[in-house]
Length: 107
Image (cartoon, rainbow, N blue to C red):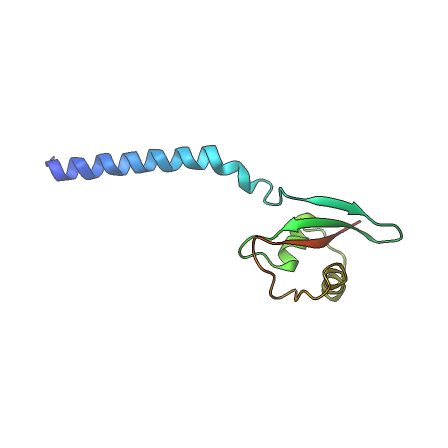
């Protein structure tokens, strides 16, 4: 094997090992992507209020699905109305990443 082929092979192996190490050591973040959560319980409400830090690519519906573990029996219009009630003056279609918003956790 020539020197350049061996060098490329060693570099590939080092990058592969580094990548696997990083995935294994930092991979726990995706288990619970909403770690910065505060819960508020309201009286006479059909949901609990949860404060969530929004990340890139999150939408109101995707966060609601994740928080409610995919079990949503509430119409989409109600979800949007509840979000707007909890976050006045915020457009549900233009949430800014790295900001906190209130979301309903349905019972």
